[in-house]
Length: 344
Image (cartoon, rainbow, N blue to C red; front, side, top):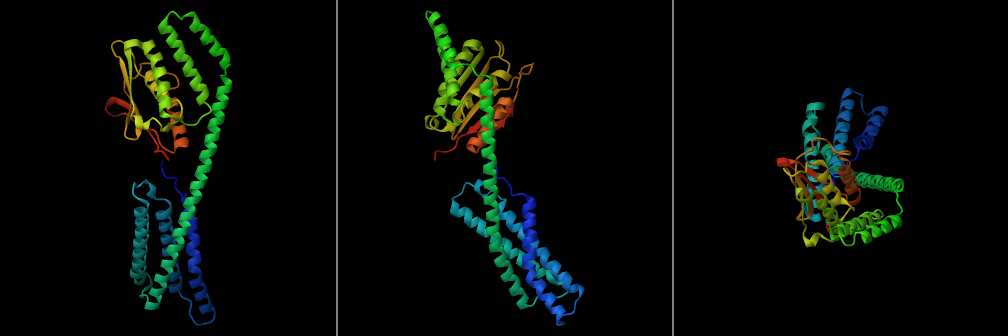
């Protein structure tokens, strides 16, 4: 999942405030000196103040950016290595800024900083970098918590929408199952028809049960998918072939319910299936991901609701697993990847 950035408005406002606060002691010193007659007011003092303030602001902004808006978690390194990298980057930025402010100061103000002033610059920026590091981490934590609250609200909204849709289309389950059982008894002598009805009954029961569950094991999804495959292959016969090869070690991982079935249905719905152009859909695993792929042979007439099922799956996947569904269309192959989270 991509890192949610701390808003630039927050970064800029914080950097401006820090710049003012750090410049305040120097401003008060100059003001008192001028008021007491120890210093003469001149534009050089204004230039000096603006120069220091500009560096304080730029340094504050860059440190907050480095520590709040760079996705170090995307690096697949041990935590200790990532923290050493963060500390190294902060140390290098501190060293670079101090060297630049000392080197450029004579060009702007017409004089070099004395040893006392250089010591003040070093001391100030070292302390400022420590303070800014913790401010940046607080902004990062605050942004993550806010994003988590938004995602939870989106998930609640999605669940409410699903419940509303279920209520709108609700059929008494007992009535339907009793009807299917009656139909099965009527066609008992026809083995294929009986099996078809049994598969249909199982699918409807699974859909009802999973409507109240956010995540289900992959093995349950595969079992449900095989029932769906039976119905589709019964309908299309030798014009459709659906192959399933998923490693056993992934069967206990979790996915949103109906994830695999909706992707296979997407392939069936949006591609030509005929005697001259039979369709093969492959469902398989590679390392820690599930894949569903098919050759692209778009129908001449677009299916209704094209793309909505995939969009909804992407949204559910992001909210529930904090992961992204990846889609590619290279070499005339439509491929969808479902990354599986490692077991906790």
